[in-house]
Length: 88
Image 1 (spheres, rainbow, N blue to C red):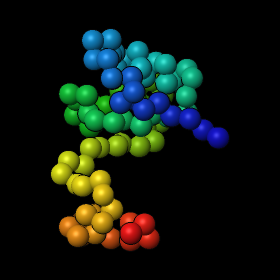
Image 2: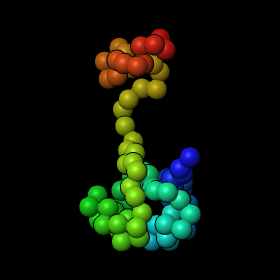
Image 3: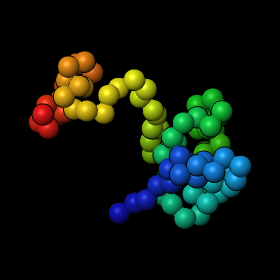
Image 4: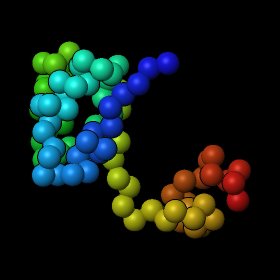
C-alpha cells in the first residue's frame, strides 16, 4: 500500500502552513502528494516545486462548488448520472 500527503490537511491551520516543509515531509515519509487547492500558486509552480523535492504528484483534488450533496438532487440537475444512479 502507498500513502500520500493531502495538502488540505496540512493547510487547515493556515498560520502554521509551510508549503516547502510539507513537501520535505512528503519526500521523507510518503509516496506522493495530493494537492488540494493551489495554495495561492500556479499549477506549474506547484509541479516544479514537487519535482524539486522528488515528490510525485498523485492527484489534484479541487472543490466542486454548487453541486448538491444529495444523490437525487445530483440526478435532477444531471450533474452526475453514473454511478450515482445506483444509490437513488
